[in-house]
Image 1 (cartoon, rainbow, N blue to C red):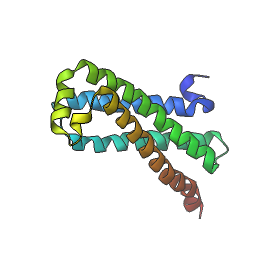
Image 2: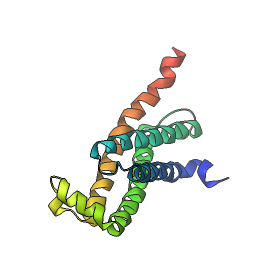
Image 3: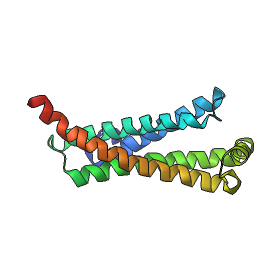
Image 4: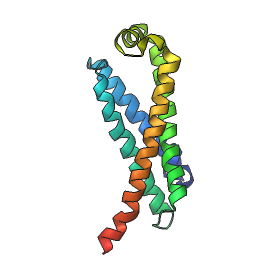
Length: 152
């Protein structure tokens, strides 16, 4: 059984996919010259939500087509946390290496004068974990009622 199809490794598998999506999107925006457009960070939520959605669908499919609420909540939050921690580590090294981008953040963000690569990457990780908690809560309720509405 491969790592990506192991039902006991759903958070790790989909967390890695979320991290790859976030890193890919960040690098693409940076290469295209949109790294300074803070509003594009909102699109990270769609990457996070997509990864959590597919993780929960996989969880439901591998656990008897029913969702145990708290296990699903733990799965979704763990998936978001793994993706966010990996992306935060990438961002830390990126900001540490690209001093110009870190200086831009310091000069242009409202709390920028208090920022350094450690704090900026930590904030991104916290943002990802808490966004993942909210997204997971919403998606669990959507996925658990999805089958009920189809069969009614």
